Image 1 (cartoon, rainbow, N blue to C red):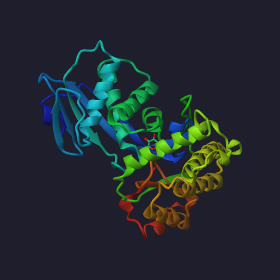
Image 2 (image 1 turned 60 degrees about the vertical axis):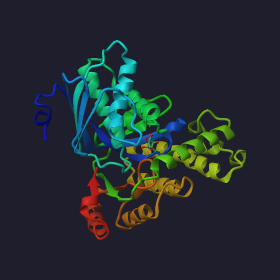
Image 3 (image 1 turned 90 degrees about the horizontal axis):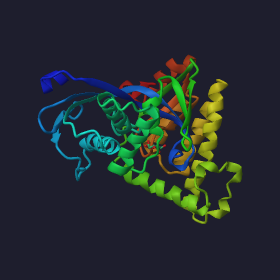
Image 4 (image 1 turned 135 degrees about the horizontal axis):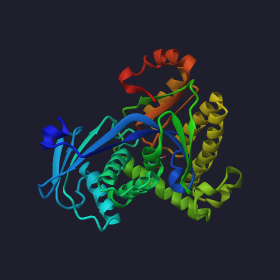
Length: 355
Ligand code: GLA
């Protein structure tokens, strides 16, 4: 079904935003640390026009659902339409001079949902970019990312950081997006031509993901209180006094973040030096820390990581918020065909995606 079939009209503006894979730096963004994601080819596209119906009309191709609304009240049971309402709410809040304008909105997407590659941030960024075009608000990409984060934090109610929105808004495919999440300064770094990153889908449902994510968020804020630090991101591993935290669980969570930040910095340097062995080693250490200290992995995910490395990957780790979803592996171009043959013995090609 096309926009025209549905709304009997042509769309006026269209824009899109891509999903991301986080190469390294997990749960470091909301503690003022570093992350290094990259864009994927999967994307969400928005088409809009004005309508004369006195209500917003929205169609999601993936859900094959048509929804109409006149106010921006959030629904009681998590619904995809809340992301659309949330974007409109935040956008109008910022632009009180713009009158409420009823729109037709068509959403299509190639992003697999709920797999840790930020389908929700891509949706928000794509909607806000299209509203920005339609209402000619001329926002820079960084501001679009900040507004998209507001939608998820203040409207939807997930305590996320800023990584996904920033890379979805500004990132470039085949470039690592190194981000200092405190200053929001970023660098786009070319990935070496002979490095292949590949996703393997664990197909693990992430039902408990939001509550577990919020729990981790609160544990890290607690660690900052123990350490009397504004942000864990400001603490280097050699400054970390583990004795200051007399709660074993909080200590483990903090240790993951503090060591992870150091790994991101080293990983950035290893891309610049085209040192694939070092980058792979850092991915493996990152996964170990994510699984042991942060307890955000699952048995199925750990199995993929183990098999991927045995199949010839330089490194592999769970990517994204945790508790299932996609894993990412780094393979040297010369070993790629062998890796694929080996990993295919365990996982079907339809669950494997080259970045
Ligand atoms: C989710 C959040 C991000 C980040 C990651 C974990 O994707 O949206 O802000 O915290 O989890 O690294």
